[in-house]
Image (cartoon, rainbow, N blue to C red; front, top):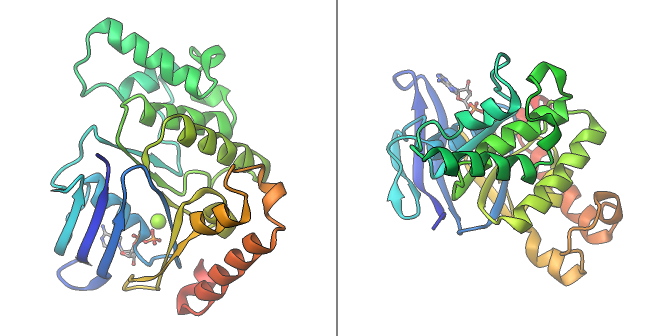
Length: 263
Ligand SMILES: Nc1ncnc2c1ncn2[C@@H]1O[C@H](COP(=O)(O)OP(=O)(O)O)[C@@H](O)[C@H]1O
Ligand SMILES: [Mg+2]
């Protein structure tokens, strides 16, 4: 249903002036959670935007469910770092906007909104405006707006990057809970190495620009063999030898990249 494929994808901006991506190959299975880490400007957001249908590859193919992506569609939902909520609309109205292209009958629409509110524990804030909510709550709204579409693919571009450290951990745990209850294919971009190791089934490390996939680490296998597959709280796993090893490996790999100082 929701597989994502990058096949020999190159991306050049501005008539050849900036080569952003070179020979990207990555296969993401249906309902797999893949995180991408890499130096600033290496093309992570560009990868995500190509899957979303906001940007076309210069060469190669980007496929979702085996079909070439040509435009945005309701099968793919995007959550950005800046929550991108409409300040003059309530929580409920913001979530409703996610459905605007879906042409649902009113009852189904109400039901979908109620479900999304429940999913993100936002029921009591349905009529609040974004400025009345904390950053964490605003990001819950953005995730609810993405989920209300019932997308097969969830694209998240540093979604927790603007949150304080504690809220970030709460949201990571929320996302794990969500991913368990409602498994989706997730492409998750982050600067935070621990976040990637904690959340993802696999972590793809990119080189500096022009971005290439340098290495893909299978976290799930380690998790299963080390018995932290149940996704306990992050503080319960972050000191485990296997977790530390993965984290250190990723940091070393990033540090080799010249753009490291900009990470
Ligand atoms: N629309 C655009 N026009 C020109 N250059 C762009 C555009 N979008 C991104 N770039 C360039 O492509 C490179 C990759 O950008 P981006 O995907 O945003 O990187 P990341 O998300 O990894 O920080 C950067 O050098 C950036 O300046
Ligand atoms: Mg980016």
